[in-house]
Length: 358
Image 1 (tube, rainbow, N blue to C red):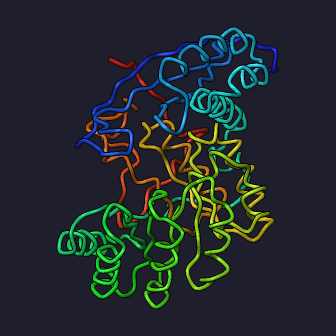
Image 2 (image 1 turned 180 degrees about the vertical axis):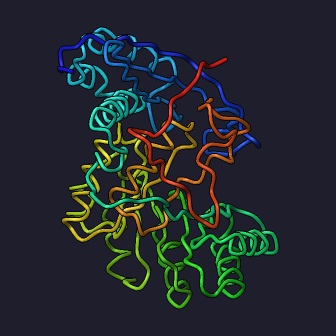
């Protein structure tokens, strides 16, 4: 097959209800809407998939995403992925779909799982994941944490910042006492002021926290650097900041110990793969997460994590947040989590195909 081989291209809209409404700063989310991109070389029987699932505050709107993907279709039909990616350069979710479809296509051509195409020669059958405990009162938080540990999760992620600093610290202490051996991550989602963050970090020093994600506003790289300087015992992870600044700038300004990579928000698995390489060169760790994506994008994130940091727990166990998923012709709940790990698909490319969307 040559790069000039024409492609059949389809773009199908989908809407997937959430199992329960999710509260965000932009309001409650009750469904995830997006587009399944399918590119096929009928002559060779190779079909690849991409997914665009926009998220308010992180990517372009659903309508803008569709418009950009429509503009990119002519280039895709001509098998000109470079031109299609250029068309999508200012629309992260649309670009993600094109990037993932290209990576899936190339991996299928190479007869290898996507994670091998992304740069590892070592077989990876499972990937550790973190359990998201979320935000609740002390008793409920501890109960959820214990349930997750009993289920085999090696790492817990607690949401902080909605409550007062003192209330959150009480929750963190209670979980640490109840689960002394589990890795514990906190996610503040930009909630704290500099003063509140320093006070929280002072108290966290003896609680063995793996990292605090996005404690300050995304734009405040200097504030994050000051947190790292003043509290070296508690690593800082940045997520929202990486949607606004390049990973090179974030790390050059000393703002993060960990880069949290959301392929959908960053604009593709290729962009996230590049960011992971930069982080590795700069001595920073990487965590791959999703934006409550459907199974195609979620599988892309699993493959990416398996390629760049297979021994770390990643935030890709989000399928159970959906009441239903895209049809893959296999398990009703694709990419299930067992014993605190998700299976890495071993078939070519993403490792599965997607059926017709109702």
